[in-house]
Image 1 (cartoon, rainbow, N blue to C red):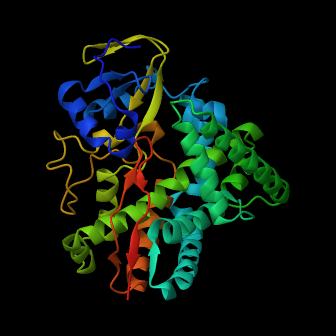
Image 2: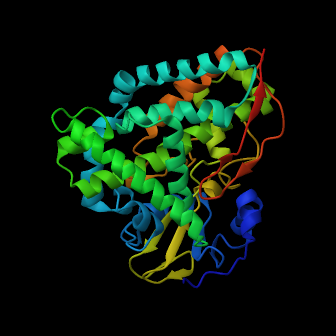
Image 3: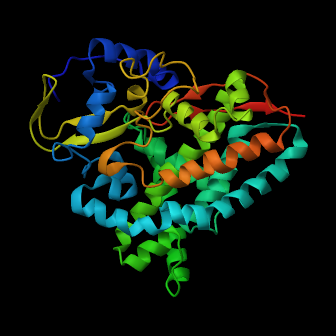
Amino acid sequence: MSDAPVYHIDRAAFAADPYPDLARMRAEAPICQVPELGATLMTRRDTIFAQEKRVEVFSSVQPGGLMTRLMGENMMRKDGAAHMAERRALFPALSPRTVRDHWAPQFRAACAAVLDRLAPAGRADLVADFAMPVAGEALKAITGLTGITAAQMDAASQAMIDGCANYAGAPAVEARCHAATAFLDAEIGARMAELSAAPDLSCIGVQMAAGLPEAALRANVKLVISGGQNEPRDAIAGTAWALLAHPQALAQVQAGRADWGRAFDEYARLVAPIGMSPRQVARADTVEGVTFAPGDRVFLMFGSANRDETVFRNPDRYDLTRDTGPALTFGAGPHFCAGAAAARCLIAEVALPMLFARLPRLRLEGPVRFHGWAFRGPVAVPVAWG
């Protein structure tokens, strides 16, 4: 481990609400060892922004890391030329033009179908009943796994992200992750056989067309699922919660003084759906007086960076007048989220405006609890309308 100061956490309390601890870390020990997580955490925005790009020191390559062991070695666990080659292979499926011309109409159709089923009910949980199926249907199209249900997509994604955050080593969590990856591997294999004659614009199709090795293709599809389901699901439901809990912000959007994209960006700053990126130290180095040794595990805490008081005034407030440009919601540098255009389209151009247009007098019907620190979102968002 590094020689950073030691900071202890209570695991359950940190998962329930990491922000008080993260604020103390930023103030007292912005780079600190957390024994309960087995890692050294970087918590300040400018430090993370600078060090994330230094992949020669803080490497994404982690042969023994949870994601690599459980899901295969995907492009997120590669640096340099190896990373860029796979990123280029996936780009035709995720480019802004493909999102605009090919996926956006499918997103709108899927969202309309979900709202058609939901509207007569008069009340729902926005996580399970709206955001989950909308995100799942979108991800089915993008990945090419059109033969599974949205619920199966969501369950597989949740099992994988739980596995990737299983730093406590719970056997049941790991077993669920293995079951999910086995299920997905079978489905990926079936779709590869179907697409072999005519690859399409899906993540499976474009990687086949690029000639990527099958192991890399499979790992990258699972990567897209692990981030492409929970992040939009939680951001759709979470942004809806933020707007309903802050009526003045919703009024700004509905009056045209702010747009849905700004509402999403500020929510994702306040509650980063992906709160952490793990790295492994490749060579000895010193950052801000802390010495790192090869093999050290480092967590870049995006959720903390997005509430850094030296960058964002009143960072614990939801404020649509804020400049969210410095936020690290999608990361930075060579590992900037490859699916950012698809996520923004689905959340801010489709799901949120269609939700509020279709369900009149939408309102919260109870308290909303959030959970997680590596991945964070609302557990349920009970609402009613009409």
